[in-house]
Image (cartoon, rainbow, N blue to C red; front, top):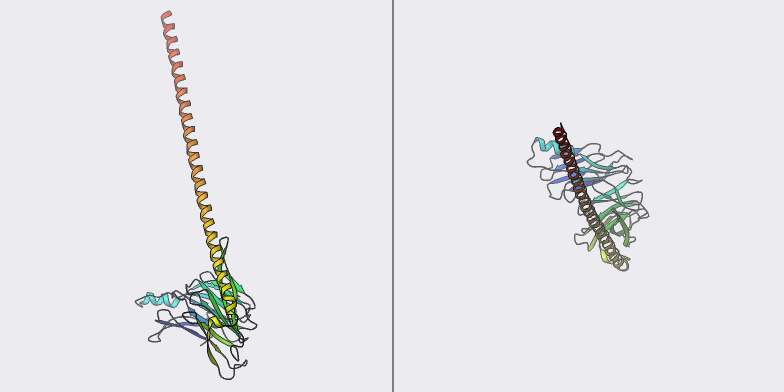
Length: 322
């Protein structure tokens, strides 16, 4: 088993083996769903990480083959035959082949279940749209060595990463819009070099985002005693000098996004006003054209009537002469 995670409601457990993904009933450990050969094998391994989304509707898996996949989790009660069929399908919702050029070691959802952050042996960190796996942000060479752990903060504004370079890093996640396209930037806020004697294998924020817990090996060869450490997130090296800048950048990005949205609304209102004015002018022109046509018709009818009367009078005069 390479990864295990409990569903948000605590009712199910998801696990990953060499190639397979399985869902278990948390109370009885009875199997509820499985997906065989979920990822391809690479160096004898397949799946490095698997996780439920916070809303419980999706599962993300990270492949050693460099791929990321999102599966529909779904649930139903009571557990009848139709429900079992739905559960055991574990339908593929999205996939990204070669999401990284190296093995994907970690993939985790944002708190709102809309984004996925991933890290890889290729030393990069990436953020993806959870529904489509379209790339939103990428940070190449985020560490000097492989990155085996990456997670969002509980408020979704920061990301913590841990690498084989023994470093724990905190990144700001700033979202903006370029036109109507969503873009994001990952900027380094703080880092703790030599956080452990060996590779940092896992790192995560506390629920209040004030502290970070990390797990590290005892040596670069994964020998010796492993350690768990707790850090003050605001006291990591460089944090005091960059937090204010990160906050300012976030506020600027939010202001820019609001300005773009307001401009879009104004343009839309202007377009609607122009369209309404044009429609009114077209309606007026149509009325005038119809009035002119009716007038012409009336004029023509009057002329025809006069001609008929003249012809009738001429016929009567001719008859009298005879």
